Image: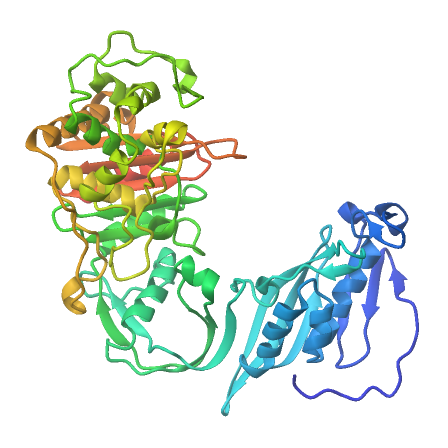
Length: 555
């Protein structure tokens, strides 16, 4: 890896201790490690490790062990000794393959590492290198980290191996490759013909990656030379696209026009930036065109690819099922007790409220869980799945919007899990794109598969739903959503946006999370939107204002 100087001799000296900082200088290739170890979670070696089985150290790794293990690994890696570096990890086979490719496939040379201060057993480090390929070269700098763990079999301190140690954008099974890009770049345009860039719209970085992967070859561009992440099995299953890390030479981009509205996209970016872990999607119900997509975190497109329990927004689909089967009616009396037990689980309403002698409309507007759970015994195990697939076009993994998506999941379940699915928990999983589509279907009366690139561009076939709701059910469902926007849990967020509107709030509990994920989906005129704020709290207070602002702006 680069030119290595021959070391004439190796001095056996102890590290110098200067003002509490241990400066570890390793001979060869000018490799220097300067890191502050102040004990912390690692403690000192006298107390952190104890003898378990005879001759086997147990307990947390010590500061000295962390320093020694990380130095051994980084030194060998820098010197191009992939096998030696891999042997300093707990998965030498996987590590050896990726570390070997670091020089041979990624064409990285003159690599140096500068570790930072360890935090417990985690050691951050900065990488500086040169990417060189067929006469082209560019500097590369990035930060990563490693964690030292104790091998169970013998207590040996080793680097806990994951591909992300090599580069934070790598998932296990991914590789780094420098060469002519597999696909030419694309110049993405909004619906008005202006260029879309990640600098202008940070949320669209992953979308642009997806557009390039899908349309790069057919859009008429020519490939450049770049260092990129080539996705492996795990990442492909998560529908992640290859990612460009550094361009050595630019290709000639082809042009792809999208359905995005520059006004709504800019507003969506601004809205999600106000809250951590927020995502939103805006659609046009009459066509399925995606007008905006934004995430406050830019590394993963939760809005399109997230897989989260949608909470009470799922009650839109469940209500359509109950109305279809005559198990509920807008103005019919409907039970809403404080609790209801089904399948051995005791289900509660928020703060154990109840509605005595109330209608189904009142239960929907206030988001009464037990009003839906109480109907589980009257439903077949696959009823909800069929309703989601046949009416709302979900849970069939067949959407083709132009970039990768997760198309919702409503699995067939029984007993308590079936009941939980009725209120958007259990095994049900959605994202804002899915729930915006649900609101769109109610607004238009027909499922229109969302799309970001018109199907005429590549002659792809859009997904369809096999049936539509009856006029009676559709009318009642719209009334339920209108009343919720007018006088229910969505009223505060939707204030002033009526009368041609409808909404539903949701809160989804997540294990180990203090606050629930807050959901909100709504429509107004020929716009529909849905958003989620993870660990934010109730949907009406968190995602609601984001969605309402975009619906108002787009009118």
